[in-house]
Amino acid sequence: MRQRQFLSNPSLRFLILLLLTLAACNPATPPPEATATATRSPTSTATQTVSPTSTPTAIRTPPALPPLYRNDSLTPFGSPHSYIQDKCQLILDKWTSDNSSPGTVVMVIMFHSITSGDPSNPNQMSEFKLRTLMNKLHVEGFTAINTSQLAGFMEQNARIPPRSVLLVVDDRHYRRYFDLFFHQYWVDYGWPVVNAWISLDDPAGQLSLPDNIALENEGWVDHQAHGYIHNIPISTYSSEEYILGELQKPIDFFQANFHKIPTAVIWPGGGFSPRAAEVARQLGYQLGFTTNPRGPLMFDWVPLADGSDPQRPLWIPEGSVNDPLMVLPRYWDTDAIIHIPEVIQASLGAAAYAEENRATELEYYDIACESQYGPIP
Image (cartoon, rainbow, N blue to C red; front, side, top):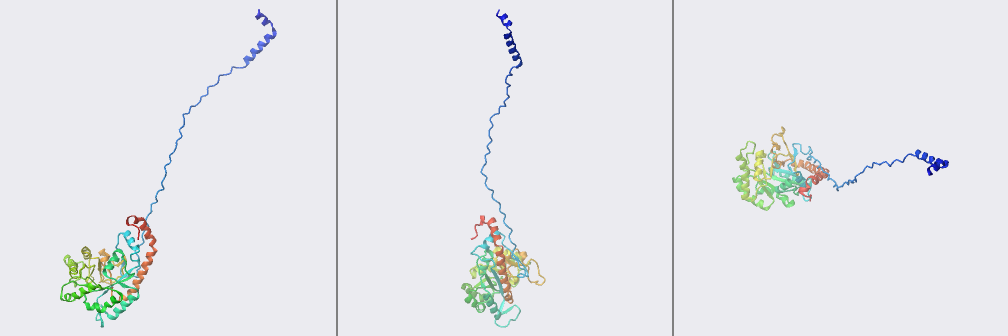
């Protein structure tokens, strides 16, 4: 009955129809879409550990050392030769303040025969010329040294006077000769002189030996070896027996009479050979002297010739010996005075050249040498 009343009521039917219509027009709300969420695993932050970096040490390269000092006007008959192979030791000895300063020079002069009268041959020197030469040396600031001093200078740059001279009298002279011509310079200036002693036990040697032992003991005549037989110069043709006799017998003689071992061999007649120099070294000689007047001496600097000179055939080339200290040059007494300016020029030029290159040499030593050799005093 209620259903019939509801259907028969026009207003109610209209309301119901309206609601149904509205419901049909509104679509059902779709369910919420599932959102695909990418799940990201926790990201671990990569932490870069920076280790402390040490500054790399720069590698220092030693500079090139300068070439050997050279001035062709000073050594016209040869060229300067170096003989010290250890460059670190060379620089250390060169610049150590207690040693000789660069430019220190030695003029070696050989005397053969001095006469109070007129010379009788070209190799003889008058007493007047001797006095003139010695006075010139003194005025120019030269000081005489002995052979041991020269050896120390040439080997280690031991301190000697900046301008030095070695006075070598060849051929075993007697006491009166030294008293007459050289003693005055020992008294006035303290200049020693070398007596190149021939060790042959002959009458002349026996006669002059006691006085020469006294001269050696007095300290102003420095005896050095001048061979045994002496009159036959050593050459490349000399036998081993002859070479040994000329070098060993003087050592035996010196030990027995002068109570020392000779420092130097003054090659008799200027004759030598590579083998003779080698034997001399083995026997303990430190120096050897030729008769070639090639120039003065400086530390690690000896003027020598590597080949023969047609204009001077008697000057035996020394380069093949490969030991400059065993073939040192000597000026002749008769013309030594004219070479004094050249020697002084060599000294001044070498000193200036050393100063120009001092910084380079010290830098080389600092880089390549000091860690092993220590600082330069």
